[in-house]
Length: 386
Image 1 (cartoon, rainbow, N blue to C red):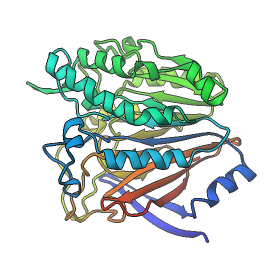
Image 2 (tube, rainbow, N blue to C red):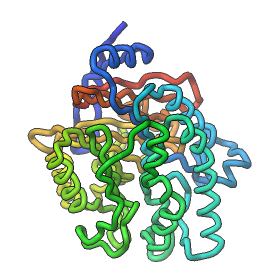
Image 3 (cartoon, rainbow, N blue to C red):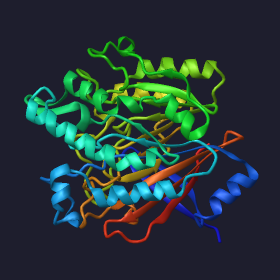
Image 4 (tube, rainbow, N blue to C red):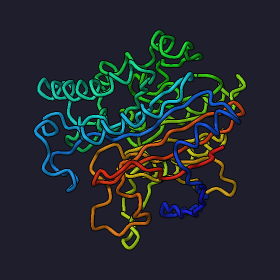
């Protein structure tokens, strides 16, 4: 049985009303494959790290394991298992993790803090290692907890933390042999080089912002907290990269960054915070970034806010692009248990999305989740994005 329900999504200055089609999950792959075959399936989620100082009340008491390794192991392992169980056979299946897989926030040049970085990266890598062996390729996105240090004069990205990212994630960016072994195909037009000069950045951005083509679609990962330019997207790199892909005839564009372009203000009765959570901390720079996203009708996936929210921002008169906020992979929820929120049915759900790119170029997405009490996994919504 199919039911339609209008869902109002709010993001402060912008509001969009989406028509969501809620379906039995088992119905979707059958329909997709019989009428319009899937050529790529990918998942996206971010923010699985634990916070020992400000954990979500629903996770207390923290297990000794999570106190040491700083991961919401229970939630993240369940998400991984669910994503794996919904893999589409005989096509590439990817998992884009949108940053903050570790607590980090240290200085990787300090021996004890460097050790903590490596321990946390190692635990997270261990959790995804099994999926990497069975038809799911993990594509990492740098977050502020990976590249920034919470040290005087404040939260700033450090070159040594960017190096630590490459040391711990570089083998995934991109292992063409593993792609070949998993899917029988390889990504093409890979760009993992240092493109920092395009945005006048201070440090090497290789393997922090990168891109590739796969089965007729283009995928771009961006570092939203480069050294010296925290909370800014590498807009000139993105514009150049998408233009080159469009010149190759690519029609579908997917961009993955950690920080949202549009902060989701989830409080239904409380005023908006004075400081936005995402790239809108600097509105002119955000607007230039989103102009590029809109120009190519790209879909932007992000995290940072520990919440689930999907919208087509309406700040432009003719908006095409979607922002998919899935910072709901296990970190302490942005909304507290007693908050009155815009979408109470999902604002405290661990959530992720699975996107199917069809042979016709159509892009469909199903959002899944379960609540803080770990109830049954459910479909949160079905979306035709393109």
